[in-house]
Length: 314
Picture (tube, one colour):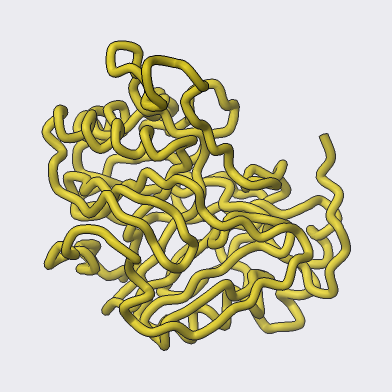
């Protein structure tokens, strides 16, 4: 295990270490994320989201009067800690106080759309290689499909990315690139942008979509097969979570998807076979037509899919 960073001219975050979300009903949050296939634990005043068999805590869910993204903790390498401090000072980025209930360590700043951001030294939890692609073994039955009698519930492997709403995608993108060192993967005008880490990550570690204010649109969770996407969609529908989008396949990122609408209007995504950007790789970023920002194929987009149900930050 090492926290040493490959040297880049500009320091860069390597992972979304944790996102912290407030919702008005922790019992319903427990039910939603448990049925989604996550390992939901009681920790402190709220819930913690893990993936089964993985030690990393990907998110916390706290009680609040309305659904709101409270803060993001972004992982940095130990060798970049002092470099980031100097970089923030040189850019005139003021330090801010940690939000109530947050760890005061690391470097706290205010990001786009008044979002609290913590830069903290942490092990890299974003992937360093392409996601696994499982197939049923040959001769598993008479054909190549897995047996339904032996199918297991979908359990995501890790957090692939998050998509944030922003009132100004271009300005937010400039911040995440210029201040935090992320790099553009692809975009569609000023409506949406996808950013990866130069330390290696999926096609997007953070994505940005235009809205009237900030907020969390969705968290995306890697699963190992297209069957896992379909089984996950089925298990959520059987639990009563029938609203969402998919199955389908994205153009930008290439992944197969099913978005499941949570009780507060945001989404959790099952994602399979997303593009991977290796550390140091120059991705051929481009500006794409609006239709390519959505899907190659899939059902019609729900009317409120890109509606931000999160109240604007004060």
